[in-house]
Image (cartoon, rainbow, N blue to C red; front, side, top):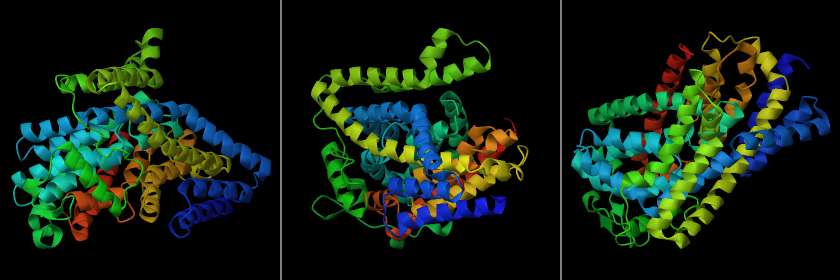
Length: 480
């Protein structure tokens, strides 16, 4: 088949997937598989070859990241149940001054808490963030809302163990330790620079309090001022339930905050609660560093293997939680975590199926003729594709996985490091978070913003982060 025809058929297949999701309201998993099957048949792979490639692609990515996603989500679910997130955010807001709070909160949410399911993390931290907003001055609501939007969305696609980050690493066969190190290298400056840019814009005419802010409604619908916003877990849960009418996935939060009653005398230090998760990330990063300098050994290779490191983190988190909240609530958190991880795993696998068909169609050979490892063209292309897909579909994970899958065959052809494609795809998938996103409506309803205000703090703020992350990735590409 001619090159131009393969490119055209692939473009039509991607467009068909978007239309099925957006216009026909077909489940994204089904749409991805249908589109991949159509692409395989149209490019001459035949019925047998197409189905075999679909299944192989699904299985390959599950082999890479299936258990990793499960371990990460379960760890996050247990941490949420212990109340660790509430305590950590509350501590940050008390320790750092008005100027430092946005950056401290942003880096913590984006780079440190990505094992927590995004909607849960937002519901947990929003009431506390809303409480501190008045202390940040006239533009407090805008600054806090922007910080949360940028950090939450960046973390899911740029930082291990964010579920989309794990999927991208598996899809592109990037060692997880390497993804962790380079993801951290990109996400830290992205969050700091993006918050700085948005704070400047917000305080120089962008934010209009009378148009962009609205009273926060409490559980019975009465308005409360931001400084009076509830901070207790049970009240936060009520706000979370309120937000479901704005687009959050009902069922993901069977216990919206997951705190319940704290066990008197059994609340351990925050460092102890997070120590197992931090240990897992340190093991993964250390393994990658030891391998780079040639000091790896069978013991370090085993302990640093992501599936083992995250399992150690999960077991440690579970042990601490049993002491803190009891076995029954830990088991309840595990059930909730399995419910959340199921849909993530299937979506990731469907993305892997599409990527496998794209690779088998010969896209790598075609694009390899036009790209070179020394140019920025492949990274700009994957960023642009992910951005367009996100605008159309509204899913960060789908757009990142699909864009990376399209460009994955290019990496071995031209010698481009796959981690750069993963980061560029993640950056592009952040562009223009808007009304199709659950995060958009949660931020709007829980932080006292109008829709117009949310378009500024969330849509514009995360778009700025998308461009900044691309810039950081291009700079990183000069050195690897």
